[in-house]
Length: 351
Image (cartoon, rainbow, N blue to C red; front, side, top):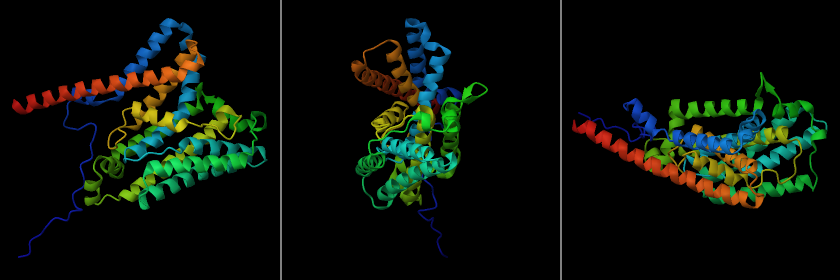
């Protein structure tokens, strides 16, 4: 009689699902790290409004959401990469290159559709190069994307040749995308939220989406379970590049006037938003919703410092300090919640 043995690829890895179905409602609420970020955001808004009631004016709120939209798109793409234990430090330079090339094409007389498609293709190509080098050539993500940052920036400066794109030369149809809206709701936040929910639903509901977390949680177990690690990592970088391309087009539509070094330094801002949003930098944990809240929190902090008329010389230092406080508070709350959940679990099993 022939013994039947299970193939090592038959058992899928157990991804670190942030919320288990067997948990109660209270456990689910306690595990939702996004709640602490939302609470910090509310406290910040309330305290600032008390200090300056004009902070919550209609125009002020609209500006915050418009400015947070582009950062949210980049944070969603970065989350896909970070949960697989990788990182992309080239997104800021991709945004700058896409914004300038798209602007140059439309000011040279090409159609908006053609320019936008070229911009998105540039983003995809940048993500594809990053993904191929990281997933198939096994080059560390930090090295690849840092090198790509400077390569793309050099290409951007070469194309720009010291010129800038002026809003007066950009077609009104493209500018309307950044300043217009539907029924009073600006287009940019709608686009960012729609993409966030699509990516978030895919990561949570589809087995292939859960495999991104499995890779970041335990790459060796994921490999033994038959997860196509290289393919998934490549997909993460390509989607991240595509979203950086979308962000570049929206950057042009939002600001109109662009130069070669637009979005310089944004790569660190995006990573900060992702980390503040509860996405573990070592992979395997986090959601795009948390990353989006992190982007909104960072944008709000910047607006708060402006409203309170803090000297621009101190704004970066205070932003960094507030980030450290937010991350530390989130970490303390997470440890306390984890301790509470362990006690509740032990009590259930002991009863």
